Length: 251
Image (cartoon, rainbow, N blue to C red; front, side):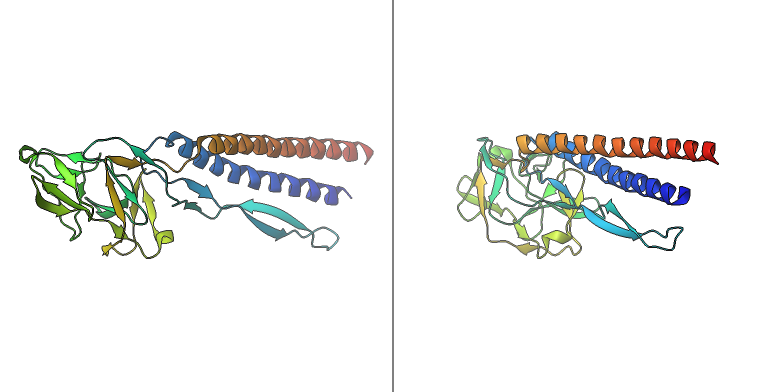
């Protein structure tokens, strides 16, 4: 009886600990989403919750099961955010599917963050100074003294009525294969620039797809669940100690 009781208590503690580990991961993800709710083009992360049923051998030969929770991975929610008007000439938003391409020191990366600017060499760059690519995969050079930059309906950047470059928007065959790099960049398994059929809007940015109220509600629910799991572990530990103490006194 003593062994059976100890196994039961250990199962409850194991299940509670597995849930706490997953909830801690979920809390980190939720906090990061909330922190980036105002970051242009940010895509929220979600955590997979799955059940793992483990067989526990008992002293009497039975095989009861204990349900454990684990999160093998997280995934990115690529749903579009709304468009916000900025009127800034180097702010661009993709209305539809696709990504801007960014040339970094470690290769081509993709982003939905169209908050761009010019560096000292007249190159169109993102906020980290990485080059934005045109439809052919080349850097975009703009002469600030040639007048304002305008975007045509076809996605062509023009100055003084003359074409400068066509702003590249590219599609990824399987967006689920994209890996998040930093806050707003994604790496593809194959760096193959495939043009996308999308509309680009100048003077707009795509806002984060994090819904603030929903994100805060999720965080509160996660905290409550974490506290509940901690209470289960604490109660099970107390019961186990009391049971052992009682059985020891009776023996």
